[in-house]
Image 1 (cartoon, rainbow, N blue to C red):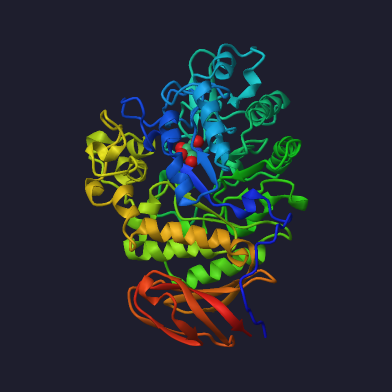
Image 2 (cartoon, helix red, strand yellow):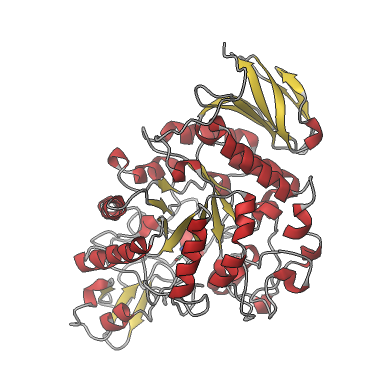
Amino acid sequence: MLLYIAKMDMKEDQKYLWWHKGVVYQIYPRSFQDSNGDGIGDLRGIIQRLDYLQWLGVNAVWLSPIYPSPMADFGYDISNYTDISPLFGTLNDFNDLLEAIHSRGMKIILDLVPNHTSDQHPWFLESKSSRDNPKRNWYIWKDAKPDGTVPNNWLSVFGGSGWEWDEDTSQYYYHAFLKEQPDLNWRNQEVQMAMLDVMRFWLDKGVDGFRVDVMWHMIKDELLRDNPPNPDYQPYMSTYEQLLPVYSTDQPEVHEIIRKMRDVLDSYDERMMIGEIYLPIAKLVTYYGIDNKEAHLPFNFLLIDLPWDARQIALAIDQYEGALPAGGWPNWVLGNHDRPRISSRVGIQQARIAAMLLLTLRGTPTIYYGDEISMKDVPIPFEEVQDPQGLNMPEKNLSRDPSRTPMQWDDSANAGFTVGKPWLRIDKSFKRENVRIQKNDPYSMLTLYRRLIKLRQSEPSLMAGIYKPVQSDSQSIAYIRHEEGYPAFMTILNLSHRPCYFTSGNVRFTGVIELATSPELEGLSVSDQISLSGDEGIIIRLEQYV
Ligand code: NOJ
């Protein structure tokens, strides 16, 4: 039996670095804060809002791409890896931002997009200039089949074939995304060296880490073999899903590349790498690498991909925990700029439960900007759609614009985001749903997020303790977090709208409710049997448990 008498001081534990302990916040720079009235967010705007992020309690900020770009894919098509897009500011603005973030004790993570460049990048312009250009082999060029058709059946994630014909040099080039985003040839040593130099450029400036775009795409089958058909394809799915991308993604050689990237990071102090990888758990965890020498945090998208179902989520948490390699650190995320927002997916009441889950599970949480004020997907009229994924497959409802709308700061014009015309329309709810109003509301989503972050950051068990599943059924999930020598916590979440009973099974415990979706419950003593309202979540400070 464990008995806790008093809260102990936080022990300085070198086992845990900033990216183990911290909460990451993703900013989509176009939509965070505009400082110059052009309707597009920028770096000076982010600087203006750092006090807010500090108040919220997050520890690291990840910025979606801010580099020069024709913006065919809103910055994921980079034309210069070592500068800042004039839309967002200058390198000086960036230096000021970096300094302002660091002076607040926070960290900055940049998006690195190594799989592809813009078709306007000088590397590609050279590569396509002639077949014997020294950079020809920096990209994936291939002759047409004898009948003139594409070299293989690979598809673009954004619709259509993955191959684009170049009239001038009479060859196809491969692009996993837009034709304006040609894939680099990572089998080429010069490409590898050039991208590792890009990393060094930003690391030398003091950037704390990278979120690496589509890490599992980076190297392709050397023989460019056809992908097999997907037997589970349904017409509502994106056209890309017609095939299983077994030859165009997740190739064994990718691990060698990631290790090289990791070596660069390891030659600095405490820098880190998050990998964007949409793969099943068993494959995802291989991206930690042998001896954990690849990505520090291969992004875990389980809470984005799974249906909002207590049993399935509880099972997936256990499977993920069980699949992690020794020493591999978990991570969790509810949303990002590519996926529907959590409040739209599960509803606002369950989004509160999701926040509790995100911030009490074991592993680094990443919060998508605006989720902390329960921003919803915003309907964008057809003629205002900007996202190429939405434009290319209009009948499939795949536009990502709805989850990229401007941050709702206050009830002034354009929600305080810009004095100009916002690049994407702002949700009509902004007068009711904004940071300023929610800051002063003890029942708001923002208050809930802030309190959860604070609790997580002040309690070693929640920050770093082990995860012990307690019970789950068709409505609820319960688990304990415990770091030896510190008070343990049990989280019980009702993932349904109906009341439920929780019985703790083999675990006996007593404790006091520390934080609840209904703050009225806080301070109540509880033990083995608890009844919860629909959409209720509680975090119990355990006095004892066996
Ligand atoms: C993943 C990014 O998150 C997404 O926004 C982008 O469109 C693709 N990679 C292509 O870079």
